[in-house]
Image 1 (tube, rainbow, N blue to C red):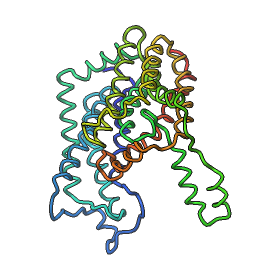
Image 2 (image 1 turned 30 degrees about the horizontal axis):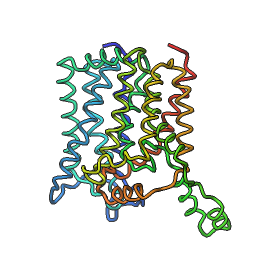
Image 3 (image 1 turned 90 degrees about the vertical axis):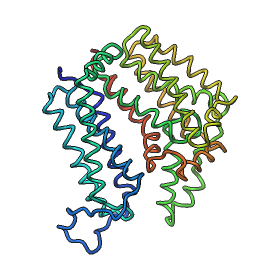
Image 4 (image 1 turned 30 degrees about the vertical axis):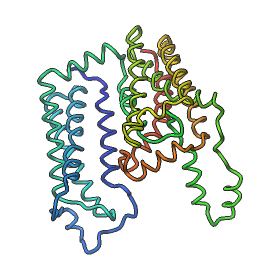
Length: 366
């Protein structure tokens, strides 16, 4: 298999970040484990009892690590031996490092069984990769990708794969990713509490403003068309773009409906699609279809503008009763919050997409 850039590499890095985040959360306060010397840190204890959730999470959570490691190595041209090495070793090594570091994080309980389950999960992922490779699955995926997407599309495909994950986090408006400014404001207010600047800062700075219906519709439309423009920058021209754009819009609608159903129940899955949001969704759908006619570099440039406008609008959008209820459900665990990871994905996704589109524009046309 020829050497090439693989989206599996980027997804592997993202999954490693997920494992590190989930293993070391809440990250603070770090302290030396009481009564333990340095040699004891390398001896993981066996747990007195097992919980079904821990067994499932530790086993299933590491399967993608072995699968993506094998696929990334194979598609990068490292051969079967490289695929076996990258598919097998990172899982046990990463797990041992995370379990050891959990000694330093209060509330986390390292155990030898967790390491064994993690190693077994990554091995299962490697075996799954071997089966898929033997059946020609990796080659078929490469053929499909070459048919639908151009060169250097791996980072964009990884970003598009993370977009539904970002939609799991409650937002003030549908598809309104990137609302980090209020959180940073509260963080700065807490940091400045008790200083001469605290009162003036808190009284003078108000970022939330009521958006007129037209701007609300525009923000929703921008949030829906942004990933479509990202996709168009790497998609092959013609009717294939129309199919991909339609699929991206459908994925966004289903992702938002799934998030709402997980927060409020299946009966309310489409409650977010009301009279106030339908104009924005309709505008986003129309813009997405029209964007299929754009050249790739024009789509990348327009994507930069769309993401900047989306971040600007969504940063000043106020909270509403829907968001408050959604956040309450999310905070109390009825939402799949992944230790708050979906929040960070939702906050950072537009900025990472901005950086990639900017880098894409400065590259020479291929």
